[in-house]
Amino acid sequence: MAVARYCERHTVFRKKSDHADAMVLANILRTDAHAHRQLPADTELARAVAVLARAVQDAVWRRTRALQELRSLLREYYPGFLAAFRRSGATNLARPEARQLLALAPTPAAAKLTPARITTALRRAGRQRGIDALTAELHQAFRVPQLRQLPLIEEALGRQAVALLATLNAECDNAEQLGQVAVEAFRQHPDHAVITSFPGIGKLCGARLLAEIGDDRDCFADARALKAYADSAPVTRASGRSIAITRRVVKNDRLNAVGFLWAFAAMPRPGPAKDHYDRRRARGDHHAAALRHLFNRMLGQLYHCLHTGQTYDPIKAFGEPAYNAEPVAA
Image 1 (cartoon, rainbow, N blue to C red):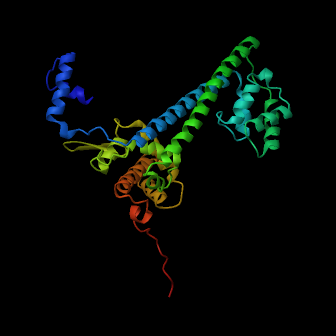
Image 2 (tube, rainbow, N blue to C red):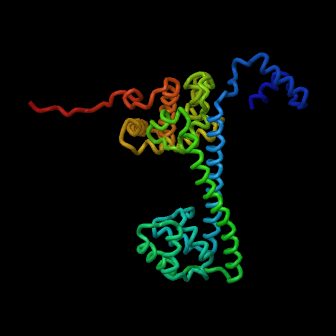
Image 3 (tube, helix red, strand yellow):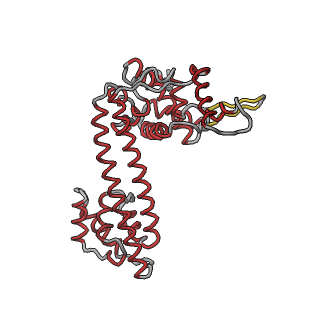
C-alpha cells in the first residue's frame, strides 16, 4: 500500500512496469529512509524462537480449520456424537477422548459400543479420572435415537469423517510437538524472565510475543511504535470539526492475536489488570475494546521492562491501588 502511494507521486495513469517500480523503490530509500523502520537485527536464538512459535501458530490454525470441517460434517449425518460429548462436558472434538471414540465408531451404525470398549478407548486416550462416570454417560448418549442418512450415504460420509480425523490427528500432534520445542528454545532466551513475569503470559504465549517483538532494542523507536505495530493503539482521523477514533486495520496479525489471548488470560485474575478492564467497561467500552485497551497498556509496560531489564511490578505499572475506606463512626 505504501509503494502504491509512492507510485502516485510519479504518474497519475496507474501504469506499471518493472523499471518504474525499481525507480520508486530507489527513491523511497533515497528521500524517505529516515521515515521507515529498518529490518530488525535479532539474535540467532530469537529468530529460531520466531520460526518455531510461528509454526506452532500455523499448526493451531490448521487444527482449528480441520476441527470445524469435521464438526460441520458430523452435523450432517452424526449429530448424536456431538450431543454425546456435549452432555459429558467435553465439547472440543480435538480432545483425545473424542478422537479415539470417533475412530472406533465413525458412523451411527457402528456406534453400538459396549461399555468395555468405551472404557478402553478412554484409557488409550490418556484419561485417568472419572472414567466410569464418563463411560456411562457416553454409552447412554450413543443409544439415543437420531435422524439417519441412507446406508450408502452414511457409509460414504463416515469415510470422509475418517479422512478429516486423520488430518486433525496430525495437526494436533504437530501443535503439541512444536509447542514443546518452542517452549524449550524460549526458556534459553535472556528475555524469558522478563516476559513471563507479566500476568497472563505462559510459556507458549511468551514465545509467540518474543517471536513478533524480537530482541533488537532499536527495532521500534518507542512504545507507541510497538503499539501501532500490534494494532492496540487507536487511529485518529480528524478533518475539520469531524474527529473519529477507530481501530487499525494494517497490523501484525500474529502479534495482535497473541495480544488478545494475553489480555483475555490476565483479565479474570484479581489485580490491577482486572481493575483496568472493569474501569474501561464502566466507561462504556465493549468487551473487545476493553481487552484491546488492556493489551495496549500492558504492551507499553512490556516495552519498558525489556529496555530496562526489570520484571513486572504491578505497583509501578498501574500505581497504588485506590481503596475506598468506609468512614468510622465516632
